[in-house]
Length: 504
Ligand code: NAD
Image (tube, rainbow, N blue to C red; front, top):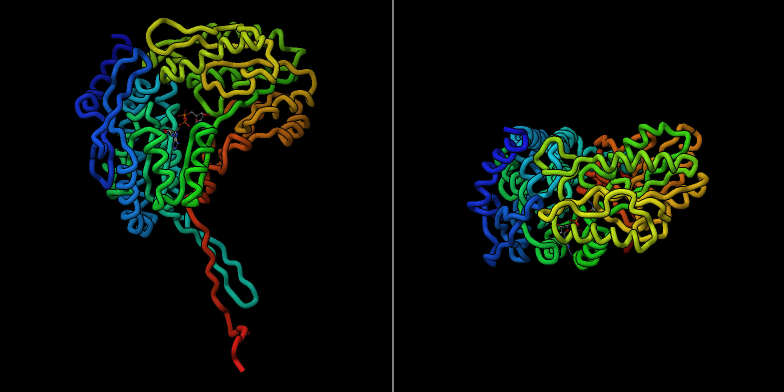
């Protein structure tokens, strides 16, 4: 049996229970259908077949989940942090135990290739371990004495929070948001993306098996415009951690205004990889390819604009085209596959529409620019050359395996092009000139920049974007700043003079 056949067989056994009972919500420790009784279907992007029915939660389900999260909050907040730490480590252990199931289900649900998803499952476990270890110090503060008062600061968890996640790497992203919330002492209502509900269900199940008290983590499936919207408007939900499109972030900000929601947004990107002619071009080529064609290009940090110096552009683009044409597109459960199908017909239509846009814009389709096969949402990895930065293909987030190459002459021009987009999530700079690297990164508008490297995450570092790419940072202590409130307590150290109004 080939590896692919073997994986398909294993997947089938993992999916059996979803086929039989569908995916229900998890509220206050109970597995429940949507109160309306409604369901929706999730399909595989590989062959468009039905995976299972999913509870279509709405405002009533969100209300029940928010109330469960509110009720569970005081006990979870007051549980000794060392106990919370143990539970979060047990969640990580169980993720590792079920990593294969998680990876196979994620691939089938999203179309992401197994070679990346097996690592994403394990990264999810690492997210839990990292924040588990930080839980015991989350409330630490400072002593700030004045001449009359001893000021002591501490942090307290903000309360029940809503977590809204997208479909591109749903498992990893859910852990990235939920682990710090729980470590901080918050309770959670999670609304996963409607296109990819499978692994969110497995994750909630793992959490309770690991000893998480009922109601601390609630899961409501459904669509953004009803379940998602209701979550952002609910008065018992104190903050919304959101990962998704910039325009959805803007809607959430409006929806949350009446209840003064604190928001944390990780949004879209149109990230440049800038290659100067003095760079290590072999490594730059590997990194540029990896950062746009891995994860089907459905990656917020993808380097979707290549800015290449005109002195080396011809040769660099020729080598790039050759490599792009060699990328293996195939079944996501085949370990050899580098690119799987795009998640959904809606997204497939959006990505493929840019093939015509590129031609209309006047760019050259140097590779790809077409779908593969008639079944499923497979597209040929695509490269546009001869582009300028004003074209739609250079300004808009395509969110697929599609790279737009733009040439530049000078460093000043490269910087101007790099910054001339609405987004500012990441930037990748390739040069061996140290002074230029320092100068360039200082002026590049992005929340995260890598020099002579692809995106390599280090969990203590701040993760997030500027401009339309987001508000706030995750990672390290920054996550706790979002999920917790600062509190200052001032103790009088003596008999300082208190103004005596009304005294004779
Ligand atoms: P999306 O904004 O369409 O949906 C994300 C989530 O928001 C889903 O759960 C959806 O149901 C929900 N939603 C939609 N409308 C809502 C509303 N009015 N109120 C509340 N919730 C609502 O995004 P997507 O298409 O699922 O994901 C792709 C996007 O996510 C891309 O733009 C990508 O760049 C971005 N992303 C960003 C990061 C990051 O860290 N910056 C990471 C991954 C993905």
